[in-house]
Image (cartoon, rainbow, N blue to C red; front, top):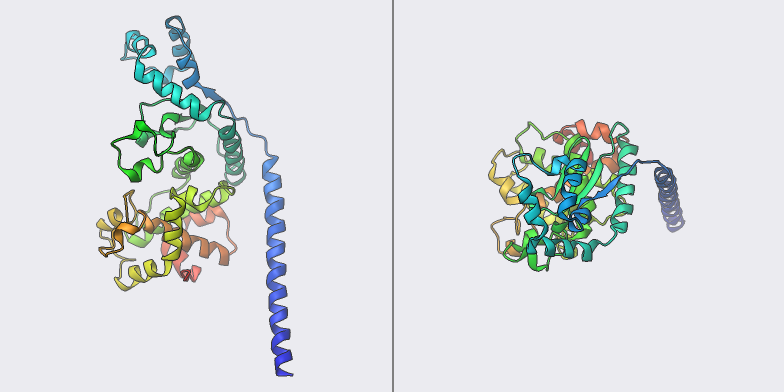
Length: 327
């Protein structure tokens, strides 16, 4: 009889869990269906193609169409010389070879902006302009109130010869699979304020909020694409989540205001700096990964809107998350 009761209770709990999961999936599918029907006025201008095919007589027309790409302090001779520059021609050829008609990325951008206006209806869809930027990877995405500039020569793949001499952790992110994620990062900076709280926890959770925004606006992207990891780096972070958390807690780092923790665990770097033998095996920015897991745990356990989350303090989020790292 006792065995029967235990089995009965287990069956009820399991049935409830399965029912909740199915209901959640149905709700999510319905939500995604509604988002996919949202109309967005997405205008994509291929300046990179137009300039690559231009002749000297086309320069004035391009300057009129794209005045923000032709600073007044530069004479026309600069642009005319660029038309015949061998490096510029090679950049254009490689971008064309990689992206072609940009159809795959256009579909991804359409979905991204549909999700953004679903959660942030006041957001104005910017005019999208693709270009080459002489591999200025730190400025590969520029988002203003009305323009989104995308430097396509920064997404040719980590093994491209244009990136020779750059550190491996930098070139790993110069791949087209991260393009939509980089745009989502640029958007998140528009709606997410950097915390005035100087604690390591506050900064961790800040980046965790940014990554959670990506969970919402990039539902089809992998976790690795959202955070900018390779598949192997993502696996390492997941496999070592409990050890990372224990390290932060046991060394009382969460409420530390030591700015060096940013360089060790938050800033882009070849690896995170635990000052242990495993450092070289670890991916960089593991503090961001941990902040992400805390925010996810909080959102799983609390009925709260995305806008409310963005305004909440890191300490409240951690307390109410009941976060427990995966083992």
